[in-house]
Image (cartoon, rainbow, N blue to C red; front, side):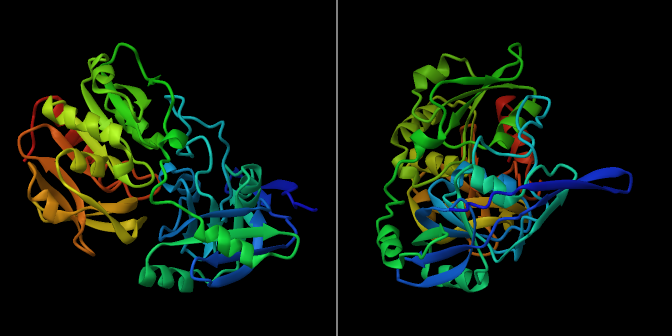
Length: 401
């Protein structure tokens, strides 16, 4: 079998600096996408030849596929990118890190999606930081991809019917679609606990020992969240998702953050139990994405699965107290039930400008806040990076209105 790895790179000089080029010389592979209702999409394969199944979702972002594909919130999912051309700036090197030693271009140590679906795969990746093509990267990490798909039609189907189970097969040989349909129907995304796959297994420290610690409960954290905490002049102690309150308090933290992550928040029972005790103890706490849902559950509210979720970099959210609307980066499939929130000590902080869903909450008397969007962006607009400053205000004892 010819697996067709990328085999050629070159560079050109443009306006005084070198632009690296990565050419995708992969031979055409057969590829099919089969949805749980039997719908079949045929296209051309790239990346790694194999069969993968998962929950099928779409993202409306125009750029940032390196950050998107490495976001742990996508664990267990097949991702359709709606922007029609993908791969045009290639993939940068993992060796490039920031001043904290954290990867500059990737949000975790590996690709998190199960498979990638695009309309058109760029034959050439061109950028000054480019070291390989998108197809080569997927091949190296054993992730299949399919191009030539009518992603607009697929997205309209998901918006109508909701997220669906699906399977993708990339092969040099004929594809058994009956087997793919069986695989698609076997997916158990809603009840699966992804935490052992995405969370650290032991505590990891980032930053200067002399600075006050923030404990980060890792339910699938992105590197950019860690970077933003360090930029606040704290150090970070990243702990497993099921860390007890006593263990967290043993670090004498200035505050606690519960991160983003994949799956149903109700699966994270140990994290919810810890969050209950953080609220009771009035520990300054910030929840992000999955962390927002976990804090809501800890406060006595309920969560539910959205029809097709919010995934993209153009999601408008309105802060209720100021009526100011921000453009946010988002990646989630669950939300907070607004009726259940009425029975808690939390107020709505942000709402989604498109569908009115809850995008942020804050406790009425305790230093506890949470947002459903990603204030760290990566990819996406940085309009809401100020949320980290709001968290610092809580730590400093300056409660904001």
